Image (cartoon, rainbow, N blue to C red; front, side, top):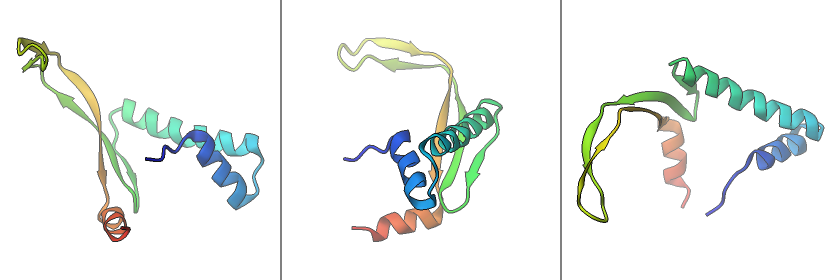
Length: 96
């Protein structure tokens, strides 16, 4: 399994567009910061042809410790959800 890091993304920008390393890293940071701030403020982030990020609020519930089987309270929380676009799902399905 491959992991794509910020460095990988910055290097791709550098190679494709001839940007300096500093500029490509700044661009990646700006993009991720914009996504993060939008999600923090409760806004959905839609990236056409890729997918949608949004924050879901989960209620508190009773769960179970998988090792011991003892019931435990899972606190209310906010989680990030990603739904890929139909175009993205189609591309992934065709790559085998």
